Image (cartoon, rainbow, N blue to C red):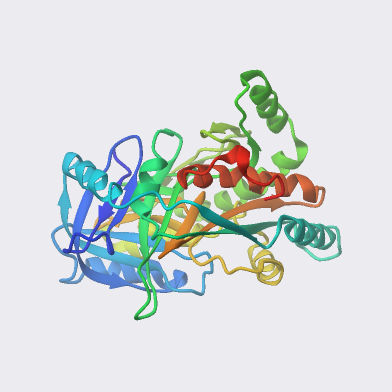
Amino acid sequence: MTNTLAASATHDDGRAHLLLQSHEGSRLCEGVAAVLSPALPELGAAVARHFASPLAVEAGLLAGALPFDRAQAAHLMAPQRLVDAAPAQAWLQRMAARGDAPAPWAITPQPSRTRYEEAVAQAVQRLRGPDALHKVVLARTLRAHAAQPVNPWRLLQRLAGDPGVMRYVVPLPVPAGEAPAWLVGATPELLLSRRGARIVSEPLAGSAARVGDAVQSQALADALRGSAKDQQEHRYVVQAIADLLAPLCRQLRVPDAPSLHATATMWHLGTRIEGELKDSSPEGLGATSSAALAALLHPTPAVCGTPRALAAQAIAELESVPRGFYAGAVGWCDATGDGDWHVALRCARVQGHEARLFAGAGIVADSVPALEGAETRAKFNAMLNALELDLAALPSDL
């Protein structure tokens, strides 16, 4: 099984290429036969109609991104051709080698870390209040500007080497006349995978930084595992996913306790949820394709909060920069309904000379604003490394 896919336009400038790549390998698709842009509530039906139409070309795939906001349009592409793994890797190396590293960088926090921690404090007040909000995920951004255009393929190549993530470069829609834009990242979180009747979701919630000292890093992992706050935050996510999937499944396995999930820079609490669909037939694709199931689950409490509507309202009021496709999902779906969708985390929106980095933290009633600010700073490290920055030289309050 492979959970990798790429799509491209017929010209070789990278503007419409899409790449999903894990340690299991990669595949490249060339040419864009169609673009689908439904809102998330209509995504399953739109995907089913596409695969029933003549536009479902020989490649038989859709690939792209889902936005964070359910009311906004998805961006899915139907590629024309698949290319084997070896030519795909050679193409990536060629694209990554174009141009020089865009240094030096000017880094601007938006909002500042102090303002972010003030927003966390406001969220904590709401969570301790009389309304029904139990958790909200608050994000912040770093705007990185360079004198030279940013090469998304170079960033992707710099993100290689971590077996715990899925790397991606996904082209994003832009207004006419603007420079092309991409979402580039390396996410550790599987939203939904489907193979026939079998489905898997592996949410992550509750995080701690990994450090160079092995003893200290293990102590941080043990503290995360024993943290009542992080365990509570994680339970909200697992319960929400299980509640949504259970009516569609003949059986659903939900472990009683999370396990540790490691990336190169972070520890996470993770739970692997596995189920068997009641209906995986072609007639049921509108509700049970991998794309339809991803749209059903998204956004989970891991990136939004709970209850979902109240948390989304709080995010809109407390965050100063729109998320766009950050904390959405990236992935693919084929004509049988199989596919993989990962949460769009540890990423940057790249356009022209700018890379906007995103990171968030889950806030519950006993969250400490300074600790949540530190968590987002640790989550930026994967992309800051990809930008070829000296982390030790960056300001401590970034």
